[in-house]
Length: 219
Image (tube, rainbow, N blue to C red):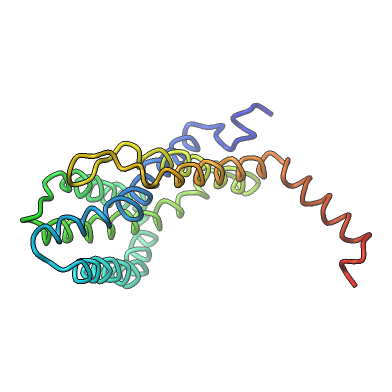
């Protein structure tokens, strides 16, 4: 078995499937989690909103996007399954997500409401795309390959999203290094997933289980 096969990246389709998680995770770690929330608060407070009000508006917008995804997901999934158009839905949501991410370039303190609206649209698109992305896994991997391919996708996603916060700036064009620990955590998570996939951590888990079976911990 080749290295790419062991990694779950043997075919072109499997590599393409795994690389989508790289781009998706960049949104998750940078826009949704670490950088845009304080960036938006800085914009809104500069425009005159109180800090608590700015944070409340962002929390409301995040909750709204999650609720809308939850309500629309089953309907869109059923339509995609019925018409066999998972790729088309995935492409459409990717396009909206990319456009939304690019549109955040125009966010200013005077346009904080527009920035929040763009964030909601982008978050709905990116999060919704995951349903169609995951639904394509059985099409690119055999039943005995699904675990490997899925692990490879998650691992590549961590590696792709981890370094992303280094490349962004705050409202004053200063590099944000406060999230220095995040990429380290994500890279460690990716390596842990790959080590488990390669069997290294599985052997460690079996060894621990063997020791526990022969110790007094079970009593």
